Amino acid sequence: MPSATFGFQDVDPAEKPALVRGVFDRVARRYDLMNDLMSGGVHRLWKDAVAARLNPQPGELIVDCAGGTGDMARRFAKMARAAQLRRGGDDARVVVVDYNAEMIAAGRARGAPPEVVWAVGDAQRLPLPDAAADAYVIAFGIRNVTDIAAALAEARRVLKPGGRFLCLEFSRPVTEALQKAYDAYSFKVIPAIGGAVAGDRASYQYLVESIRRFPDQARFAAMIGEAGFSRASWSNFTGGVAALHQGWAI
Image (cartoon, rainbow, N blue to C red):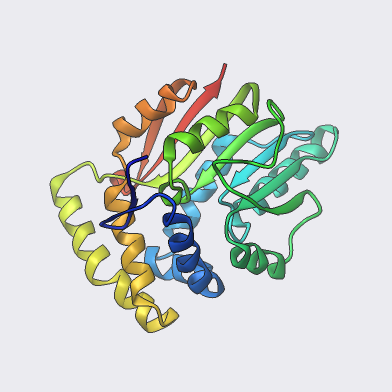
């Protein structure tokens, strides 16, 4: 890669992991609170919709990549356990992989069901063998990796034939009016909340900028297809403020 994006900056790819790690080291302690404040709690509805679409089942191995504090993993474990009580089967396993040890530590401190295991690892080099997982989910994390194409290829590598790929990420609002309103809120309000609540305006400025540099819905769907997934598609949430992309390892 000739360069990597870090917010509105272009940086040496070798430098980006440390820069991103620094951001999440600083925000880990208040990460979940800030998500609630920034979205008015709507991120919880988006994540519930992702979990419902995934429909975790007993006995499945689910990779929660860039899983941070484990809020998605807890949803998956709860749903798989409910299905297990209805019809039996083996315990599901949800592997939370995150590059940032501080985020993993914050998640562990909150506790988790026994189906959830934690690992510090890189989305571009997952600590899993080929064709091991039934599903791979990454929520609000892929825009922070150095090489998105490499992370998609790695997701494809660890999935079994027929495995499901789901990615929830901020995206492009579908109307100009919504885009303008979202830009005004993102650049004026979110960094200010970060400064007031987390004492870290700069990290939230980066997060807003990273959203603007991420590919739009159609381009990201094309990248998923280029990584070897079939039937790449997306569903817009809240008018395209976020989007759920899907693909199948066939």
